[in-house]
Structure formats: C-alpha cells, structure tokens
Amino acid sequence: MEIKIQKVNESAIIPKYVHEGDAGMDLFSVEDYVLEAGERKLISTGLIFEIPNGFEMQIRPKSGLALKYGLSVLNTPGTVDSGYRGEVGVILINHGKEKYIVKKGEKIAQAVFMKFEKVDLIESQNLSDSIRSTGGFGSTGVKS
Image 1 (spheres, helix red, strand yellow):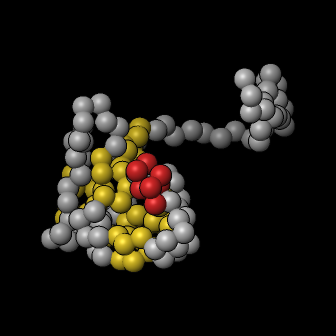
Image 2 (tube, helix red, strand yellow):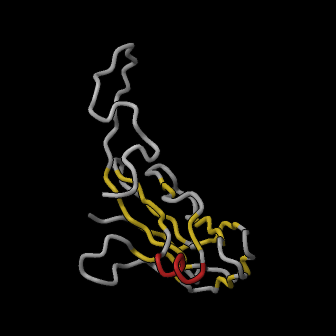
C-alpha cells in the first residue's frame, strides 16, 4: 500500500521502517523544546499524510524514551483519521522527574497504520450473556 506524504517543514524527516517486520515507523521532531517534568506539549513533525479511507495512523510512544526518561504520548494511541490533512503533531508528556530536551531531528514517537471497519450500532434492550458477563477492571486477578 502506498501513502502520500508531504513535508511542510524543510527539516521534516520522512518516516521509514528500520527493520524487516517492524510495525511502526519513527516520527521525528522538527523543533527544539525543553519538556519539564509533568509537562505536555504538542511537538511538530512537519509532515502531512494522505491516509486512505478504511485506515488510520496510530501515534504510539517509543519504548526506549518511555523506559529511560518517562516520556510518552499523552493520548496513546493517538489517531490520525483519513480525512485529516493538517500537520501531524505528537502530544508528548514527561512523566519523568527531570526535564527532557526534545531536539530537532530526534525520534519522538512511532506511527502504525491500521485497517479498520465501520460498524452499525443497533440499540437493543436485550444483549446476549457471556462467561465474563460484567466482570472487568481486574476481575480475573493478577496471578495465573
């Protein structure tokens, strides 16, 4: 599948897969910013995508940034819909105890393209039962 992409900032870096079998492509910052502990900020990628109908682009955190610095994507996964033609930004949040310096050209998140299906919701007064029923929020416990 091909997806059109446009640079709206000359510093933008076109994402690519690094390894065979990777699901995500790295997204890069086009700006320098000091992200204080507990702060969130929309970081620009300098890119616009033309995503086909029936697909979304999910914006996900980088595991290394999360583990080493407590950096994450605030609305993870963020969704970029097929109809959106604005610049893609990444809402970074610093859950760490120290400030984090976002540098121009640095990996800040990853993009994964996902196919989805539209559904028709049908209001009903009676739903079928299941084994799980209403159990949720830890109802299966934490041990095997």
